[in-house]
Structures are given as C-alpha cells and as structure tokens.
Image (cartoon, rainbow, N blue to C red; front, side, top):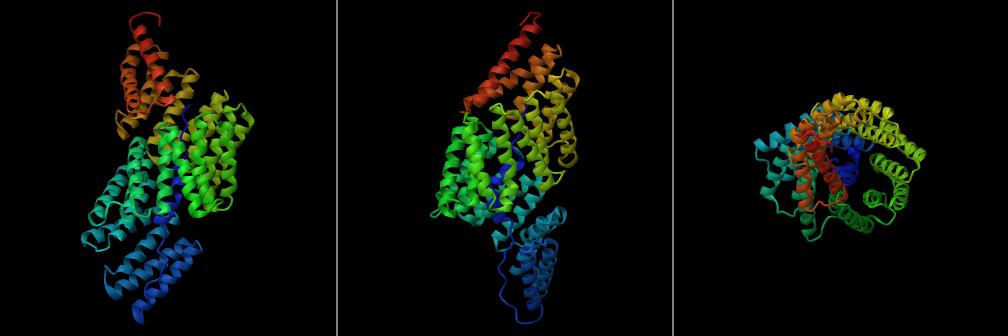
Length: 484
C-alpha cells in the first residue's frame, strides 16, 4: 500500500523560510508630514497592528488604503505603495482569501515588469507570492512558469549566491516539491545547498531550510543515509543559531527520525519523535505544521514493532488533528486519511482500508482536480485494496487512471510511472491477461534499472526491480502457454 509523506512535511521542513518570504514588511515608511503621505503612514501602522493581531482581513484593508494614499502622493511606482500592496496580498493569503491574493500578486508583478521597476527584490516577492497561490489552487504548470520567471528576473541583477537569488531558487524548489517532481527537486536542492554554502556568511535560516528540504527529498528518493547526514547537519546549525532547546530543532529531528526508521531503527525513531513533540509544544505554528508528520512516524514504527493498537491510535490522532487544523478539504487531511488506510491495510483490515481510500479519492479529486499527482496516488491506493480483494476490474481501471496521470505529470522516467506500470501489469496478470501485462512491465523494469544505475540503489528500488523481473518472467511464461 502506498504511503505518501503528508504534504505539510515538506512545508514543515521549510516553514521558517516560507514564513520569512511570506511575511509583511513590518517597518513603517518615513513619516509624511501632511496630506496623503500622513494618511498613508497611519494606514500602514493600522495594517501592522491588525496583522500582528492576526486580523488579516482588516490588515489587508489598511494596507490597501495605505497603498492608495501613497499612490496619490507619489504615483503608481512609489516604493512604499508597492510594499503596501504586497503586504495586502500577504494578509489576504494568510487569511485564506487565495483568489484575491492571487489577483494582487499577479497585478503587482505585471505592473513592475511592464515598467522595469528598479527594485528586483520586490518583484521577486510578488512573483513568489503568485506562484504560492497557484500551487495552493492546484495550477502547478503555471506555478512553475512563474517561479522560473522569478528566478530569471533576479539572476539578471544579483550575484548567484546573493540572498535574493537564493530566495528565488528556494521558491522554485518549493514548486518542484509541490509538483511531486522529487527527482528534480533533489538535484535542484543539491545546487541550492551549494549556492547557500558558497556565501561568505551563509544565512542560517536559508541554510537550515535548504538542508531540511534536501533531506526530505533524499528520503523520498530512497537515499536514507544522505537524508540522515543532512538532518544531522541541520540539527547542528539550528542548535547553534537558535539554541539547543529551540522548537525549530524539531524539524530536522523529524527528518532524522524518518531516515533512521527506514534503516530499521524504530526505537530510535520513537525517541526522536518524542523529543520533537516536546520542542513543538513551544511553538504553536510549527506544532500545527509538523504534528501530523510526527504522528505518522510514530504510527508506522508502532506497526513495524507489532503494536497494532498504538499504531492505529496514533494514525487516527493524526487524522483528527489534520481535520481540526486544516479543514476537511485540504491536502493535509487527504494525506492523514491515506496514512490511516495504509495502517489498516497492513493490519489486515482491507475492506476498511478500501472504504477510506475511496472516500479519499473523491475528496482529492474535488479540490485538487482530476490530474494532480496526489489524485494519481489515491487511484493507486483504491486499486491495490480492490486487487487484494479480487476486484480485478476496479483495480485495472484505477491503475490505468493513475498511470495516465503520472505520464502527464512526470513522463516515462519517474519512479511513480514505473510503479504504476508495474502495478497495472500485475493486475492484468491476476486477471489472466499476460500479453498485456508483458507489454507494460518491461519498460517499468527498465526504468527502475536506470534508477539503480544512477546511484539510487536503495533496497526499495532493488526490491521493486526484483518484483518487476518476476512479473516479466511470469507474463512471458503465461503468454507462451506455459506454467510460470
């Protein structure tokens, strides 16, 4: 049964940098003496106060008023007008008004580009905000185009290792992650980390973000030893910058817990998760973003240790937490529900697992759209449970839909595509269609072989290749009329 890391585990890895890039500029402009400037100053101060009080609608209104006053005083491209518009967009984003926030970000971006605005960092912030909104709306291709444009723009005016370029690269990495293009994210993360380290005095915030995000990418691609090393380095940097008992240390601790879990150290994982939980109690926002990741690690380890009741309890706690903190229509809930279904499947409660996966598929399609990669995963999970229960027609149909999504989103060479081909082939074999299975499984096996040749020789990849080679042998024998 497929398990996907909760979408917010990647977010938790980079939450500090995201909050830095998506926070309002709290400093007030130089005081205007009379008229529109003075009114703008007052509105800006009201915006800061409302934002600090988490009244984001009011903050957006005050910032928009300030922008209007500065426009009257100094024109469309007044520096403080642009900052107030960006602050208004960020306030709308924080308040969940994504459509309006996107309109602000896109409008600001077009205004600055069309007028060759002289402050590239403000354009970067506007474009980065626009791409975040597009990701949240599931408009992934557009988001990647905007992030590429952001990077291209800032690279014209800033050195490669400058903070502005690093921020733009970070935004692009976040989009690759949201697209689930993990292989690309891993390679791009290596480049980003090298850039951050090349700075004369690397920003600890950016360095820990790069380390955490790359650790998660290494984990996703099966490079668990590399993930462990990066997490340990991030813990060292975080403790040096924030202090030994800082809540920020919980993020790399959870990455370390995941890496050692995959290397068979479940008791160590539980201890790390417990320590992370204590640290997260000191920061409500980090706790909100990271708790599901922590509970998923605990559930999986308890299951591996044969503690089924504790595993189910941790997984159900994670689902309840996601519903309470992110709402029913969220990727957080889809991920938590999926992980609960996976736990039940491994406990032998396959019918219960299938029911949850069906519910999850409909929820994911409703707010992510028909072609999102996470919807492909939901199709696969329905298919696997159905296949286990002997419903070959449902399994084959669901695997085909997953494969079509992965081919569209990723192409031939990705692990997801190879996995879906192999699963579909096995369903066809089970249904007595060896010729059709053979046509599918050969390219899947080759894709995994290529993956191993590229150095991704983790046990999961080798195990998958062994399974696929078995599929090939079985399909070939059956297609020749022989018993495998």
